[in-house]
Amino acid sequence: MESKRGRIFSIAAGLVLFVVMAATRPDLGLNASANGPGPSLSGWEIRPPVTYENLTVFPVVSSENAETGDFATLDEALASGDIVVSEQGDSFGRTRDGRIPSGFSTGPQVNQLVLINRGKRPVLLLAGEVVSGGKQDRIIGKDRIVPVGRAPLPLDVFCVEHGRWTGISNQFSGANLMVHPSVREEAAIEQDQNQVWAAVRGETKSVGSGAAIGAPRISAGALSDAMAAAGTQSYPRIYKSSPIGRSVASVADEIRRRFDRATSALKGEHVVGVVVAFQDEVAWSDIFASSELFTAYWPKLLSSYVVEAMTRPGVHETASLEEARDFLRPIMGHIEEESEPGVYIWRKQSVGRLSETRLTALAPKPLMLHELRVLRGDERGVIAR
Image 1 (tube, one colour):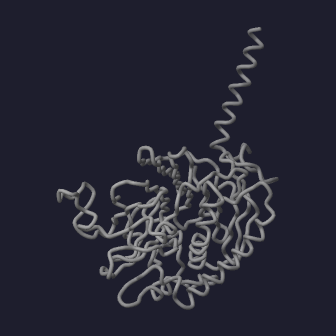
Image 2 (tube, helix red, strand yellow; image 1 turned 120 degrees about the vertical axis):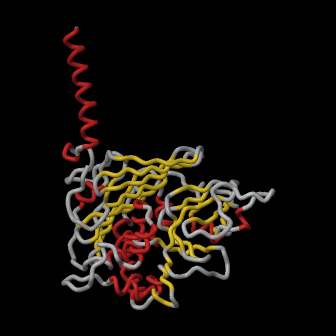
């Protein structure tokens, strides 16, 4: 009897050890394999790629589709007037007895705005979303949830309009834009204003010089020319300038058509995100809790990926399905965490060049709303784990 019990214990211990090792070792095959879709440990599956020029997009699907109707997006809440985003100042900065609450200042601040949620739903904010107006256009600095019925909220942001510090109104409107990954990385991961400005100007390593074979369609000089008008550098000008704006729109339209065609026959599965490769390097992913949230963000996410692709060398190389699957394997690294009790938990984890942020709502029930993964920098190589 003792021998039999010993064998059972050994088998059970071995299975536990295998699962633990599989979570950190991609070669053990517990995740997706090269022979089929294969569910990941997160319940996601990656479908064959959609490719156009130097941009490749892998649909991420799930058999589950969470209920996310309890949350409003930034763009829809701004459009409906459910939220108000404003420069800091006396209108939002003082209490009834004239005091300035902790965390507020008496006047506008480059890296902080004020937000009031007057609607009936919590509002989801994603790092890199653009709000236009005020003294300067800004981008949201970090994923978060803004609950209903709270006092005016100090909101961390980054400026993407270097050179203007004036405006007719202190309030902001939605730009329906997401900054491209090189800029978004500096906000969401690095949290550095100077690097955000440099990325907006096209001074990051990922932006080519335009001098070599396979040069990018948008050079650093073209970025600066597109934004430099009336003494200001406004990020939305990338999308409005000619011919850059027309090129971004035409490429996005083609990718969207191919993506819709590739995912139209799904049965019992929902598109909840994408893994993105530029040339043959898998470098980015945005994944949501539901297909509804993905659909809401997809147009401006896609345009941002197109801008990024156009600032990179125009070499037509593609990443493999297995490389995309490998990109989403579990990582274990340095963890940073922030939370608002009863509202959300934001968590960042980094290993080598790979960084991941996750935003989890705590109400009405715990739910991971958005995961972002970034392969930082421009150097090619194996992802460290």
